[in-house]
Amino acid sequence: MAHAGITDTAIGAATPRSARRSLLATLEHRLGLLVEIPTALLVVVEIIILFAGVVSRYVLHSPLIWSDELASILFLWLAMLGAVVALRRSEHMRMTALVASARPALRAFLEVVAICGGLAFLLLVAWPAYEYAYEESYITTPALQISNVWRAAALPVGIGLMALFALLRLAQTRNVRALLAAIACVAVLIGALWIVQPWLRPLGNLNLVIFFVLIAGSCVFAGVPIAFAFGLSILGYLALTTHTPLMVLIGRMDEGMSHLILLSVPLFVFLGLLIEMTGMARAMVGFLANLLGHVRGGLHYVLVGAMYLVSGISGSKAADMAAVAPVLFPEMKARGAKPGDLVALLSATGAQTETIPPSLVLITIGSVTGVSIAALFTGGLLPGLVLAITLSTLVWWRYRHEDLSHVKKVRAGEILRSFFIALPAIALPFVIRAAVVEGVATATEVSTIGIVYALVIGLVVYRQFDWKRLRPMLVETASLSGAILLIIGTATGMAWGLTQSGFSRSLAAAMTGLPGGSVTFIAVSIVAFMILGSVLEGIPAIVLFGPLLFPIAQAVGVHEVHYAMIVILAMGIGLFAPPFGVGYYAACAVGRVDPAEGIRPIWGYMLALLIGLIIVAAFPWISIGFLKT
Image (cartoon, rainbow, N blue to C red; front, side, top):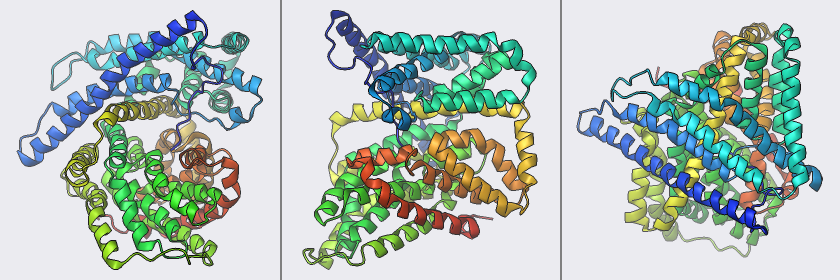
């Protein structure tokens, strides 16, 4: 997935001219280090704790009864401090398509509005977060027998630090006129909503449209990070139309971010960075290139296959594309491939591999819907393969006349040699899947097995391990994870608000009453999640609507794993389809290609993906045929 953040168009990120800006920049940098270093250490500590739990339980047959509890306490701190790092590094997910196309003056204004919107949410929830942490101080944890305030304090501390960095960023803004206009705009909107409060409560569920569609949608399209856009909408809904204490919102955010299964998100992100750094991804791509490089369209097939294999390791689309594209693109361009077609296929393979374990979207679905992670991991392999076949069919058609007169066929001995070099890397996805399915480790713990495996293979077999890159990798892991988890937290609050309003019951009644039964339900779901995927990205969409729609799918007779594959693939197509799909722009950034060049060729690949999705939807066996009954 793409992670566009608040850019520095209207912000003094370059060397400031004034002494004040220089002082503020220095202060921000030093405070940033004070946050980044412990956050990076938290990633390391979580890996050690979870791997120790696996070894203790499976090898020594003496489970550590406190390991999950300690991991959970530290995980909330990792999530909140990671969100702080993401804000400082401008890496919170946001929709930038409209902002980027605006005139320079409007773009500068919207960039500052994005910061002000996020700051407004943080300031408004700061006191409820403190109250929530105080209430949690009366609870004692069962295993460690310590006050739960040690865990809950992460919420007010993280919110306070994010607010501090947002203020520092605003203080460095060069365009004072844009700053004052943005502050006034946000303040007027909040004040206007507060004034009309007496007229809002009698509107009933019409408020859902006002807050969850108009306000949330306006914030998202204006470039406010998705987590803060969701937070502002649910905060306004609860504060202005209900009598619910705002501390309840903090509790729902805590609940959404604290599922221990979500701890696999930062660990798999780190694993993805690790396989790229140790040369494992390069070894896999090298073998596939030797095997198929002499075939017409061969390197395009390699790109499809490499993304399939790498996705089985990293779980992160951004990491997948960053591991594969730099290895393949230079040679593909040398053979005459057009940059636009390359980035179009890279985007399509990003959508194709969304179901391949250990996809972060699979993990999120398991967390918010209760579907077995092991079943999702098993069910996700064939749907991705079906889409790989439809993409490869289009590649064959487009490149059936490719001129390969200048390409030498690699000898069988060299292919065999590259296979043995790549074998330890190719084995990793199977090691991960086997460890979950056979019960060696949980879906949360299995990432640590992959990390230890990658460390050993990188140090002993490939002998590529740059220790200087370790800290930046850990910080990047925390930043990406914090951005994802904060979205899950605020989206959980929105989902709870929708449920409490009775919307979920109305939706269930409407969807179960559709003519055509399960077929119509699946068709509507595909269209809906393609749209949601393009606007919200996969994880926020599934957190919002997964708990509402999965019970309906079961009610109309659709298997939950089959339905999961359908909605994941539909969201993937939306995520990587221009003009709104941010995944497409991430692929362009990785491939260093102008987005305009890929617009025309990508539609053929999107059609191929849609055909593959229809095949998956029509034949449930593809998703559930290998599940244990």
